[in-house]
Length: 161
Image 1 (cartoon, one colour):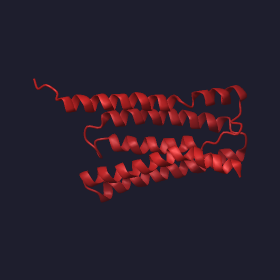
Image 2 (cartoon, rainbow, N blue to C red):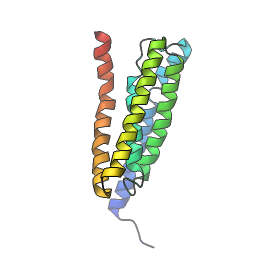
Image 3 (spheres, one colour):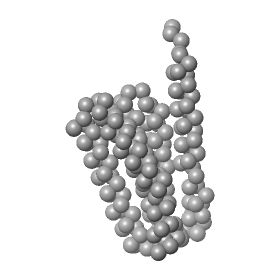
Image 4 (tube, rainbow, N blue to C red):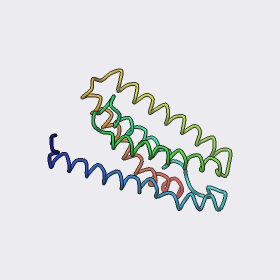
């Protein structure tokens, strides 16, 4: 039986710690949604950050699957879990949205998000070999991560106008 190297143990430990931190990040909107449930209204909250988080989870989930990257199961599992959380948040946001306009905007953005993810997944399989596919999806993942973390700033700018 081969023993694991210090590098392999360190990689697993870092991945496991990353999953714990990501899980905590996915739980961070719970107080907001408790407030929404209590008020039965989304009040002044915007759904954009949850939609962009969902896109990021989908792309990172795709990155972690064997068609893109070998040995990235922890990436796939945590982002699959994150996608489930984001879908739950988006569903609650949709149910308690204050207007038909807000619901239509959410549906339109969700459709756009699904199309964007489908385009990334299809392009990565159709146009790239394995190592280049991983780099391509990794770069798209970084861009989606930046947009996810920048989305609250965009909401702040939009609401202050």
